[in-house]
Length: 510
Image (cartoon, rainbow, N blue to C red; front, side, top):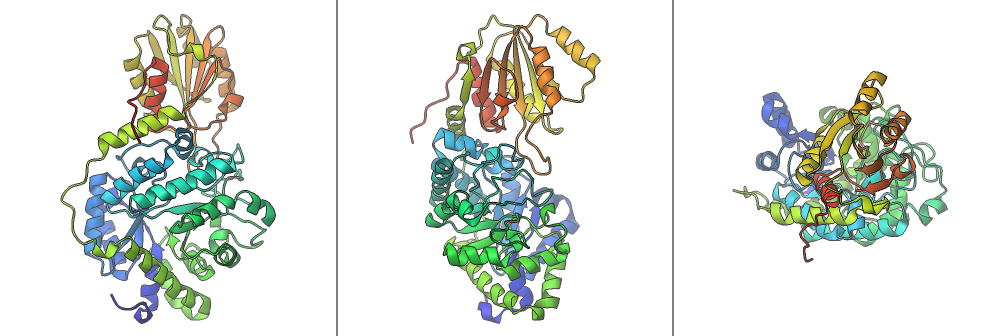
């Protein structure tokens, strides 16, 4: 590797761009694969990984590393484990459940082990946001909670856990996405708090992260007039200056994904990486078109001395992190992956079980075998898999006569009446809600009509509500017993079934 001061402008810019890469497409589309290899030959700094299995990701990262003159840094959103982005890996519960289960550090170390095992050395986590707005459509259970102390403690623990697993972390989404009611995947949120208000609350978890020596901080697509009245933090020189000067942070600054709609209207997509890097970000994450971004930077570099200076500093930070992660010693293809399955699955199940919170008549569980039960899942979107998993596990765990199905706010009245008539003999209704923060959904709340549907179904029956996501639905539904799992991961689904059936997980020693 040549010294950074001898790199071309295009090489400097490439090292600061981390495109999205789809593992499944990499192996199924030869043209797409060639395109990614061409990016590597351009000197791209790394990739953000999506889709695939652990085995296929390992194969892809090894192959791309072998084509790269400078070792690549692969990153991914593994906040609560690899299944957040991949088909396998251990399904740990979400951050809020981790905090409730009080073993965040151990879980982060386990996630780091699985990530490192497949060539991914930067986990875009922890979420350092405080979920202070109950209607927040994108943070919610991704946060460690709604109060400062819980978030601070668990942010520090998560970072420490990642370090124990030799994986870098990323505190996100600066300066805090918790007090918003808008999803920045869709449109730009604005936070109107004063700088003092931010300093007294939302900035404190980021300061804790800095104290824990977090390797990177993600700049959110959030307009914060207290920092910059004109530009969102992800493309704001003033926000970067605040982090560097006021917070004395010297690690990497990473933009949130630049293909999100929150930045629409500020610049053309191909210009956004230029503006983000010019503002002082070190990594332009997931530009819409990395080749166009490189070309725009190369053509316009002479118009911005700030960008030229920043590129040199940013490349030095990126290379130093790669050295600290020992990525330059990477080129030794692993013949097999370590097997983490059994200990990590036990850890996940214990954490999920310990996180469960109950309100109401706790004598309703474990479910008496004489009761006749009807269960219904309320699904956000079209993915029925989580609801199906819950019903399958519950049917195996209890001997009761059960009826299971799915309901939504678009059902015709004749169909609802048919369902109600079909459950006349039941004396317990279980409603499993799978509303949680998802990009581009815009809400974590069920339609109001579902409240009336559930109330109508549950007339003269015991109603048990289980929220596998949004923890605030106790204020939405009428119920006799309400269960919060704070996650819809498979471990949380299994833990809920254990609670319902009176089983306990295997207790693990820390």
